[in-house]
Each structure stands twice: as C-alpha cells, then as structure tokens.
Image (cartoon, rainbow, N blue to C red; front, side, top):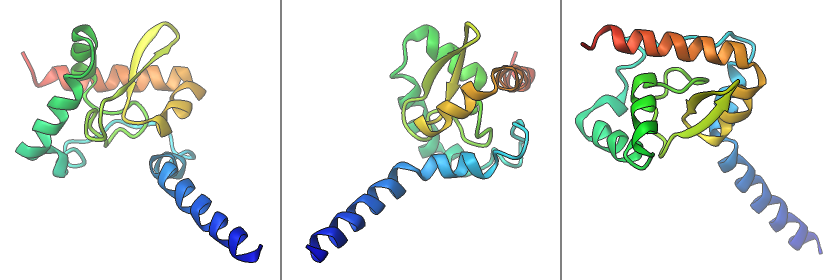
Length: 134
C-alpha cells in the first residue's frame, strides 16, 4: 500500500511539473505589469535560422488570416519575450472581441484575467513589429 501510494505521488508530481512549466514562468511575473519585449530580449536562440524555420512551421499551422495576425503580434501577449511559434502552434484567444495570440496554454488564463492590459500589450507589440517593416 505504501509503495503504491509513493509511486502514484511520484508520477502525479512529475506530471504536474511538466504541465506547469510555462504556467510557472507566467506566474513568476504575475506581480509585474505585462511588458513588451525589447530587441535585446528578443535575440534568443529561437531567432536563429533553425529557430525561425520552426517558428514559421508552427505559425503555418494556423488559418491564413490568423497567420497574418500572429506574425503582426510576433510575441506572446503574456510572456512578451516568447516568440509566437517557439513553443508550437500559438493559441488564438478572443479578448473583448479581438484576436490575441499566446505561446502556450499556461498563458491563456493570465491573458483573459486582465483583458485591458492584454489588449494594450498586443497593440504595443503590433506597433513595435510594424515599425521596422514597410
């Protein structure tokens, strides 16, 4: 009985830790306001040529209209240093009737918890990302 309980506890703990990976990162910044990514923060490994190919492939799994929206947003609405597509296909949310993309399921509840801040962050991300492109 003790061995069964111990094994169940170990399996449950590992499953919980795996599931909470992104959620823990999002919660660690929960006391901080949602901020936009800076160019220095955006120069991570997901911006290498192989990372770009993975990001492009993940975004290509979205509908064409959603691909354009995700590319214009470029970064997660919650974890603004995480490129959309760097953790798989971005998740599309409707926040006050507007499309918002997040990098993973762990960011979904935070994005919907404070819709005004989320929409402001998305507007900043889109403005920043369109500023360098013409």
